[in-house]
Length: 373
Image 1 (tube, rainbow, N blue to C red):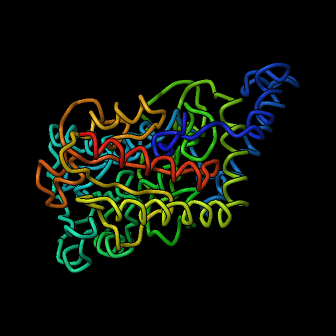
Image 2 (cartoon, rainbow, N blue to C red):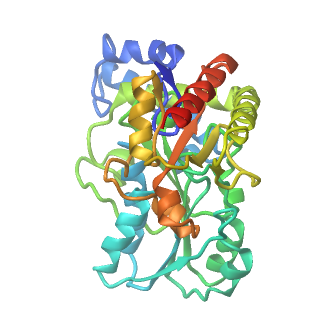
């Protein structure tokens, strides 16, 4: 199997496994325990907190460990909303379901919604549209740093300036961006920012919410006072250790990973442009180096994914958290792509283990499918 779906999840790095194993076997103590095994677990969590904070230029005290990006996004949006009087949520129109669904829920709790339209070519909100939005004190804005389908990178600073000048709050979903581009928490202008371990060669089931001291967040999980009373529940020590190691490696190897996947993406897109009728989305815009989303004429995306799977290639038809429903990508529809073209879209997301030969094999397989279709 040639794996080309790294935006859905990444394989676990062997070095991450090695870091986790002691905390799965001999160092099994509860981190709340005052005895030696407990203190060892607590120390390991503290070290991982430093590693994750360093990945995004944050303070260790700003890191709240969660079960993943979805919980972190919910914790930020609902946690702030539950602390404030209902106002307006200003949201990007191409957000991940773990943002768009909580936003819809908050509408049922009295919050008004305002969506930022995006440009059809880039999938990015226009800064002039952002600056024209009126915000009030206590409003909440949310904008992803990089889109999980198109790979388009967003500039969050214009929205941050609009919100902060009004006394409002900004959440940034950096799940797809971290480990692929430099991420600086302060530079985004965000009050809160989310990360996920399994997007950067760490284990599944662990993520983080980065929250500055001014973010008014009520915990979603009340319990034993873990994470400084911000997220109750016994910590997943091995998972957190793995996340920390993955974050450390992502920071150290960022440039090498980025240059490798960019070379492969350029090769991939050159091959795609040689095929008739291919539509490459946001193809000339600033994107993640590893991501290409495109539509193949005459194919339904889900069908094409299955045909490619039969040939030994793992790709997706969009977000792994929203695929399988048979509906066209909401991201592409928000960009003004017609429904028929959106239905034919698939996404290739490359990783550090992919090779030029694998890209050539994929282009050849896709070409053969198009000819025989």
